[in-house]
Image (cartoon, rainbow, N blue to C red):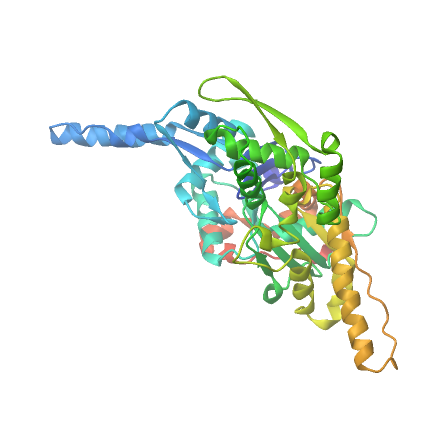
Amino acid sequence: MDSSAASRPAVVIDNGTGFTKMGFAGNVEPCYIIPTVVAVNESFLNQPRGTGKSNNWLAQHSAGVMADLDFFIGEEAVARSRSSSTYNLSYPIQHGQIENWDSMERFWQQCIFNYLRCDPEDHYFLLTESPLTPPENREYTGEIMFETFNVPGLYIAVQPVLALAAGYTTSKCEMTGVVVDVGDGGTHVVPVADGYVIGSSIKSVPIAGKDVTHFIQQLMRERGENVPPEDSFEVARKVKEMYCYTCSDIVKEYNKHDREPSKYIKPWRGIKPKTGAPYSCEVGYERFLGPEIFFNPEIYSNDFDTPLPAVIDKCIQSAPIDTRRALYKNIVLSGGSTMFKDFHRRLQRDLKKIVDARILASEARLGGEVKTQPIEVNVVSHPIQRFAVWFGGSVLASTPEFYAACHTKAEYEEYGASICRTNPVFKGMY
């Protein structure tokens, strides 16, 4: 183990479909939360070729070098693409999986050198991955980290395990539970027993934060709100983050809005990006209809109609029978799209209804002779669930066991990228 690198805090980078959280181990919050997007200047790649052979090679080489240097990430990338047509946006991660490795390498480069401003050779790295990532992706990640950035040690952690590990701050840490991770690009329900993911029981839901934004955008467009088309997605995203909440009963909520529109309807003011002219619109039913697609997905999509509480119940029922009570007792929320007001209460109520109905049905089948012990359903909500994965990584990477669990540069040179396929769980910690 490289003792000089181990004496410095590890770098923790949680790459999500929508946003990347990055910082140093031991901190409570990430240093930066930026959109996972890269803007590359395409004009260098379309340089006119010279007539001579040597000129042609030189032109292509210069174009390649300049394209490698001239790119932006995060908010800066979005701003560049708006102000200049030569910059094309690339989203390297789709539905939790890295799709564009060139863009991802550029993205990590800027994260390390421009944002965190650290030398990668001096720090161990903890990166995160989606629970259904193929092992080949881990190998590619290991190659980039060890070959391009020359890191002394690397640990690739599964996001739900880190979300559970975020509970280390409490007096009693439970490493058995179900993580409901609702990000921008995907929703996963992942059961974890003693720190190990029960892979066969993972459920994936094709509805996530981006779908809530699209639904709000669609509702505002259908109502004829005066929002410029080029700005409508961004307005919908801000409306979602600022005004949306989860209601207990959709019909009652409609009645409330109709009875007292002045109390519930919120005004929205913005400036048109192209002309600079001000505009205004109203935010109404979409405040509660947006998050409702997790509980009644049929209002948004014809392809998927299973509510999130039913998916969680199916996930737990498919897990080993001796873990089920513990899983119902510790359902942990993670990801920015679980931050809606009262989201955890609605989830707990709906899940409790499903569980209680099953118990009543089984008692009725047995003729009431056997009384079943009630099952405790508990959905855990905490203030840091927006970046619970990053915080769990920060906690784990600040323990001495972390350095022993990392794959080192020496191991990589001896055995190759295949070492990154497996990641030991810190068994000594629970």
